[in-house]
Length: 190
Image (cartoon, rainbow, N blue to C red):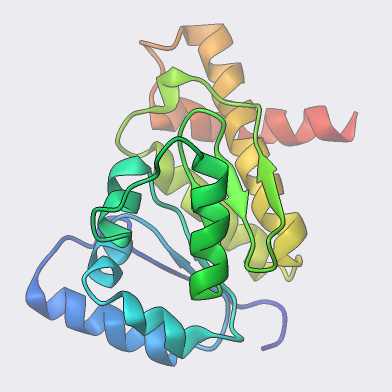
């Protein structure tokens, strides 16, 4: 890996037996950092053992609560969201971004971060795709996972907060969130 590679599987993929088989093959073979979102997660959820083949390679999964329920074969989250995220990350040797109110980023070494940015207006189809793209970008630029993943989550939420402040939570779209990423980054630099 030359520090400039990362792969994203899932957004816009759709579900079919053929796409699931291809996804599982890619999960096993891809060497650079891998981000699994949306239907990439759905494909893996039915064959969770495929994550064992990725041990030692960076894998980031970005489920919302419903996708996490599928990943855990119905065990769900329980009362301790952060604990459930950390346990999953440890068990499967991956980074887990459990999206939702106070998104949790859990690492396989047990470290975790609880994000305080974001709002309910981001709970729309496509918002997670924006986050997945941000993760891909930062990892593809060679940032270490412990910096890139929490930074992407925070910036995503901050861009969502900027969109909500200007347009309202009900009126904002994922495109509005995307358009505010530069402003969120600029706020960090000032």
